[in-house]
Image (cartoon, rainbow, N blue to C red):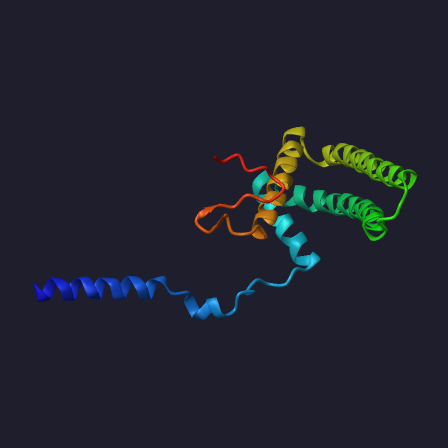
Length: 171
């Protein structure tokens, strides 16, 4: 009987030892590498090349065009953010000013879609339409995975986490 108890205790000790965070990682909660645009673009390049199965020559011709497209879109997104922040900073704006901001945001969205449309045609000069589609899917997947790195934990207090702005339909 003592042998069984000793074996169970030893088993629990081993399990608890393995459950500990390696190298005391729990002490450093922010153990992620800092964000840099270069690292982001490197990971994007690797991910899209792998997911879309691009050859090295296709990748070398394609990625300068992608970087150019993303740069133009980023500049437009910056303008859009500035317009939205202007509204947040000034709560005493009248309806005409809000209308102008909404119009600017919508026009920016249209411009971004036009840029994307133009560049996807340029992508076709280097890639087949099938690979252009695969690149599109890979870019969407990369965005989702990048966002998932920064999501809060899925559960809180042993129930599914639902943001406050989503109506709770539980009884």
